[in-house]
Length: 169
Image (spheres, rainbow, N blue to C red):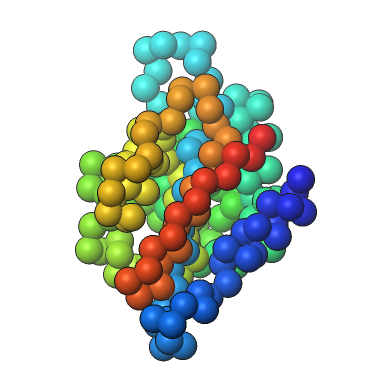
């Protein structure tokens, strides 16, 4: 399964051969994931850590992206998103960058990520909202609270935007 996912990510990351694409156009690739399983034992805790299963899933995300060049790793300023993003950032020798989930895809973010491959770790509601902002349409709904397995891949080359979703358990 890991090999299949790696091959798919590799193929999706290749430059487009569209007639509108020239070698001078930079390709931006975004990998969006929701944070891994969080601790739910204290309903009053607004910033829980990952569970043991969540930590395993976070390590698996890093393994899935092993053969993918990553330039930046973004996360919100919550324990669960940071703990999900850290294994990916560590495996790529990168530090975490933070984004405000109330200000998605602003000009500063667009400028910082243009032409790069970026992993963004978010939440069940902000991840699809962020994807929708980038693709310019309301295509994706909030993720079910029990679903931690979606990988959204967005690729932008010039005016061409492609998007796909993989389910990785």
